[in-house]
Length: 55
Image (cartoon, rainbow, N blue to C red; front, side):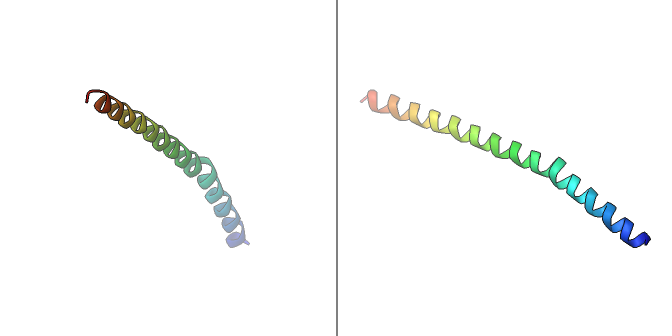
């Protein structure tokens, strides 16, 4: 009986860790990488435009 209860409590705790801590951190990291990629794209486009206009 104790083993079953501890198994259920462990499963609930594992779900809490996955959905409460890991997934929000993962989505935050993906959002950061997406914003960083857009900034890099803007910088590359600006450098390309400036270098082509100076010729």
